[in-house]
Image 1 (tube, one colour):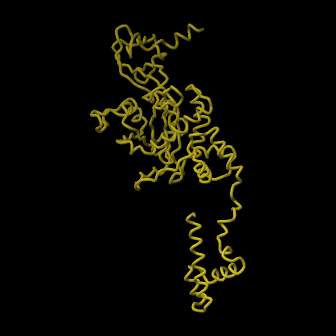
Image 2 (cartoon, one colour; image 1 turned 30 degrees about the vertical axis):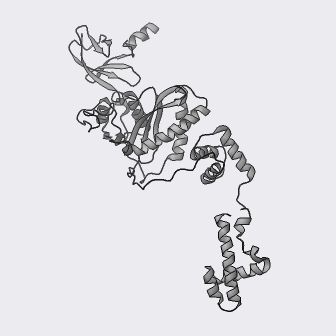
Image 3 (cartoon, helix red, strand yellow; image 1 turned 90 degrees about the horizontal axis):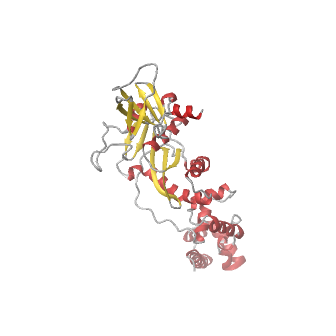
Length: 391
């Protein structure tokens, strides 16, 4: 016998004992009701139901009658069949978001309980001790998180997922796959945010070598010697904040755990196997849907983004390397020889200090002070020469 039905039987026996005492006149109606833990009006109702239907009249109707809101058996069977056929292995929240997209009207709790009853989803373990989370930034644009996650997103292929998200709202501003996380991917994520929203105040990152120089393993970062990425953030006036443990980046770590669970299943369901297709799916389907489901309202109205001077952005969000021009009017860089073409300002630039810019797409440019001398393809050939040959 279930615990609920056992309690019902005990209450029936208590009622019979109290009823006999009240019938004998040893208790008033108020006192008899108090012994049962009910009001006098409910006690009178119990008496009426007992005289009409006996002990069965005292049964809780919720135990014997189906709720008018109870889902039909066919609906539950269809839900379980859909999960088994197309979504096996998905967690309850992920499945429920797709269930709603396809017109489902039931709540998340109802969906989760039906799947747990069918033994398709295990109940979550009991949570540990209470911990206090760091408070979110009050406004969008005050602090952004950027991080990468290496994972087998499609069978037999290890890619890095680069995520740039807002601390205040958890909105994902940039989300894309790349072969390897590094300076170029970090520049790309920041550029997408600035072009869409403007300059932000600060960025919270791990201590990866493209973000920070760390003289001693596991030690403090060197804020006086910036990396290429750190130099670019300094030029843009964006403060960089290092995180010293995975727990400090808990918000982004939890997001990556969700991505690793959901994205693998969604890419497989869509039949996607190439990075180009996967990035298209992220931009057009996954990121918008993810933001709709997981974004939260900021603590304050407004935002902290500032309009950016976009004409200089490309030459800030890139690697910059100082070089001295050799006697043949060329510059050596990463195994390449960059020939400086003739121009109207100088006969040559021998022994001049110049600056090589390497952009996220691999292309190069050569600057003398603020003036660009030439642009190059990743193999070191001049872009103008290729255009002339093509013509």
